[in-house]
Image 1 (cartoon, rainbow, N blue to C red):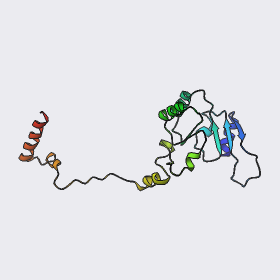
Image 2 (cartoon, rainbow, N blue to C red; image 1 turned 90 degrees about the vertical axis):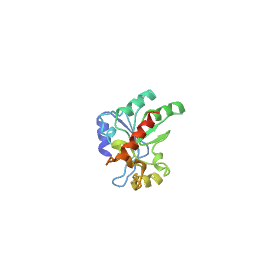
Image 3 (tube, one colour; image 1 turned 30 degrees about the horizontal axis):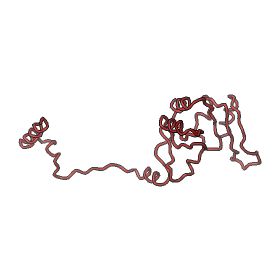
Image 4 (tube, one colour; image 1 turned 120 degrees about the vertical axis):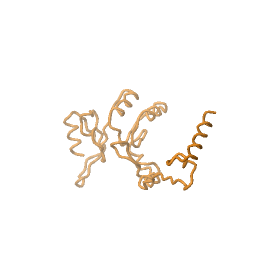
Length: 174
């Protein structure tokens, strides 16, 4: 997390602390907003499993959609807006892992919602019943009966099979 912040700061980002910094145990960090992020910054290239939130200020929903679609599919998408038409439009034309509207990260805490990504952000879902389905590795199995109607389509093509296939061909012309 520290190296992500340092890289962003060196490349011109502004870091905003969301709470007072106190002595923290080693390995702990206070939540931070990161403004002025660019695609060349490590914080925009890595999935962040920590208290850092890069903020993109975009001028339109279309610009947001273009940004999401021009990059690797994000593990999470946070969008702030009260206009339901714009929200629906964004959801329809983007693909991501979880989405939280008008907040951030809370989709992760909803254990009835599946958690997981798309593409390089991971595959499958890892909460509740969806997690059970992901890790169960269901597979389709179809077992044909010993004597099935489709047997006539398989070799060896006996005279009777040829006649039946011929009759079916004649029927299909009707």
